[in-house]
Image (cartoon, rainbow, N blue to C red):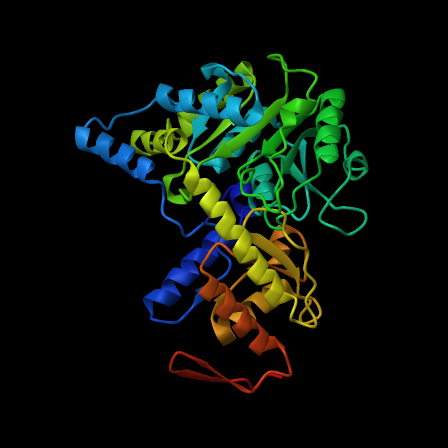
Length: 405
């Protein structure tokens, strides 16, 4: 079969592939524990559900504008003013099928073939392939000190004549690292001076811990005119536990939003009116669910970190936010793919290989599930890896015998 160069260069999303594998194993009745997931297990807000049901009951489920319905844009304007102290107009907003599509359409609107987009490493698995889909080149930027916290100098060393954009995801997937206020100020100033687009992927910006407050990139921008190259991405998936609703948005200058709308109009048209109305319900409704989720995740993080610290061979950096921990298991196995497959095969625990995020020897472990899953999942991993563990383990009525150490 003859496929395009782009099609041949794109691989399946590893996180979506793991979700599918977990579903297949569960359907078979296997007691699998999914510690690789990227969606909170709490229920979507009641206000969101009721808004969607009301729209469905009306029978008026029609096409929507390619850039989003007015009611949702109004809610996003209010959200942007509340959390970013920034007043924008409807023409500064596009609503997409999730934050992922908002980023993708933004990249398609600004990148030419062979141009470069930079992002901190470890990075979200989709950034490199998103660049490829534009015929562009994704460039990971590693911190010189080996940490999860790059400096402006690290970016300056990578920026060249082909650099068109920088993506900053803070707090970061997969590490949970929240970049400092100084770093955000520096990168905003740097992009303005270099005339580079800056995409702030803020999808986790309210899911932060230890008393931290969201950092507002607009506070450090000198150019807030319609020539600004600052793009802010957000959505309802993470903070409202509405991953399946697939509603995200971008806030940017009007000319760019117009171009993004033209592209999206030919790709998918506007997102479903049912899902947009649900997002309106979430944004306008009772907000206590976001804080409840944040507190639950912070507690889950603390439990997970304590469990991982009980391993002699695991190195852990405490996440500042999100619901992911990026732990170094290289003392046990250098290949994260081999280790991930080993844990699935031997103890039915799913994790995501660090190689997918640009760093070998690590596993991304999610703590957005139940305490029971976190505790039992890590206990299974420890049993599989720790030579001091007993040779037998019971999972329900199944007896596992360790014969590989």
